[in-house]
Length: 141
Length: 141
Length: 141
Length: 141
Image (cartoon, rainbow over all chains, first blue to last red; front, top):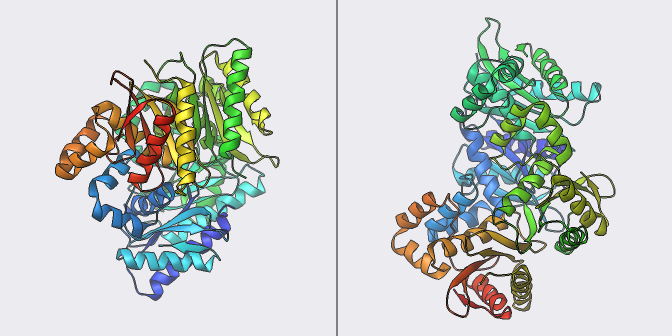
């Protein structure tokens, strides 16, 4: 099963709605497919210009390693040089903090990831989960 | 004046609608701001996974050089080494063909660019223009 | 549908067998998934050491652009600067010649690609097709 | 003496078998030659897509430095900036943790390396050793 564009739009809209409901700073949200490639992205007005790369980096590491942002952060805190080396292998595209959320289908297979950036990493992850759940999918933060 | 997320969404939706109306292959559409940074992107179901980079590359060169895809292609055909050198400077992110469309405000100032990929370069540019015009902005192909 | 490791092994073994049957030079064969990521690779004894990158490059461009090696070569011959620019976007990983073969499932969806290198590009493509067909899949050279 | 493709296949199959016997997560296994170049690779179904780079990185640093994963990790923990600098020199391709295992011939000469990833670094190294020994070679973790 793949994340359709229709579902990716739901994820993004609902994540942004959650951000407004929680009065977060302007958010940026990316949805990647199971190969780490971009399906859709939106950056809210007022967000800083470099947010695409941060959102992508949170989601990209999640897909490529099969490990969501929280687990990546734990590994980075225990073994910083390991995550630095992983970034070398993945072209410097990995941002190992919460807000990178794995997306699973009903059988538990990873079908992509969502990356949210703009507020605290924990709030970013909450917004991502709201989007994923609204699309009827399962997230892992 | 900046392209708002609301307007970027209109550009993307109308470009995709134009593609379906013209029976083009699945399209991918990016909207960049005046600094060449991503505001929004969507890839239609069935498009190949690497389309984000191509769409971005068409729009990125347009903004960074202030020269739309058609003019970039003319320069590449006359002087291929020049566009290759430009790509060295811009980190290899420029795709110098039609489908990269400059976006101007009412005074003529460049406020961003749209990149469309998926069908022929000329059809990509037609879809981009449909989106830009639907958003009440002026495009330069 | 994804290419299983079991099927990737069949593709590689049968491509190598075809090479020996045709008395080709030592071959190297890679199988990529639908996101352009490596599932399996083998380099025959006697092949030059850099063959992994060439095999991957033939298959990688095929997946990312949704365009097999023959079509990529035609584009490169008509518009060399375009394929050079594509390579910038894809990190220099694209080798636009035959031997990069798209793999489709029964519905026609691209589920990966095979890259073969070692002999002439046309012979490489024949070996790739032999492997893909032996695995019960459809190839596009 | 070089690692033949036949032997590389034995290494990979036996490492994967060991992983299944120990009930490890899906593994990915690469075999590199004495120049750090890929001979063969397999990624088990269910492994995350980015595993090739991690497996290669573990083995690549081992060959290039003549220092297996355990020794690289010790150096990274004592002097993180040194391994970061090494990665600059080696194009960011080194992952300095266990699971990168040097392969020696009967005279003790390094003839290549195996990289395994998917489970804990220590379990990855055990699987690699099982493969190397099954092929009649000597490993150094």
